[in-house]
Amino acid sequence: MIAIVEDVPRYAILAPQHADIPHCGLSVSRDKSEHATLLGEMQCLRGRIAVDEGAIERSALDARGRYVMPLDDKSWHILRLRRNGRVAGCARILVHPRNVRFPGLRIASSSIARHSTWGPHVKDAVESELDLARLHEMTPIEPGGWVVDEDLRGTREALSIAISAFAWCRILGNCLGFLTATVRNGSAGMLRRLGARGLPMGGAVIPACFEPAWGCNMELLRFDTSSLNPRFDNALCAAQLGLLRSLVVSDEAPPLLGSMRRHVDAQVINSTEMALTRMVA
Image (cartoon, rainbow, N blue to C red; front, side, top):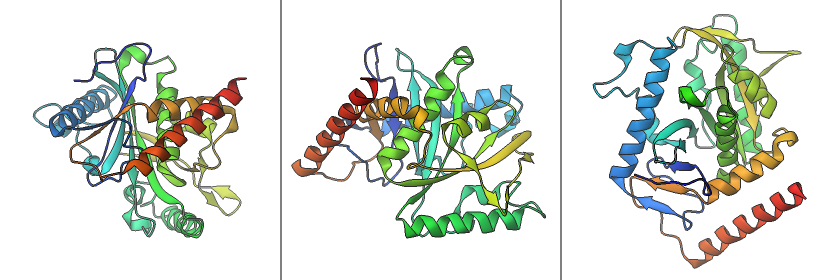
């Protein structure tokens, strides 16, 4: 189990299967058991909170109390750790190939995407965004799964986890993100403040829609890493630096990288530190 203290980053990153891990010359644990332990603990936290909030039935959990979502093994997971290494919060990022089409996205199965009236508008809006993403060589991603333990609610933790997820998206490269966010707990409003916005539909946007799977209204949002709210530049830059110094846990050996890639990693950290220094000055 990972041990952490106050003066080091409080995050760990779980890598998906067959991932090209960015900056993995920094700190990578190639430990299948550690990966499984942290992933399982995150799934237990996610399941417990989802049951407590009435989002899912207890029957949706497996025998170990985990809420296992499709493609968990294909996603990045940003874990907020306590000082004893226990998982206290998480966010998930699913990365798609650049040639993905609307049916290949998770949001294609959302209620709003299957709505008799709004569904065709959702498909058209997303396909238009994907066309622009390919034109500008952007990688489509689907963040989500923001969860924070009960004792950390009402603090900055929820926003901090969201910022860290967006910061990791920046590390992954130039990305276009689609996500659904709950209206009930303020997640949609928080993500809008960070720079997400609704999908355009003529002169309006796709409205929020009730999602039976979660028992609440959800908004379908999009964002890209080049147009996040500049108000949060300091926080995003600090989170990016922290993540670059955090441990990446992989359940398989990452790609072999030579000294040139490690040199590039050092340049990325140095440039991030310099940007953060300029912002704070």
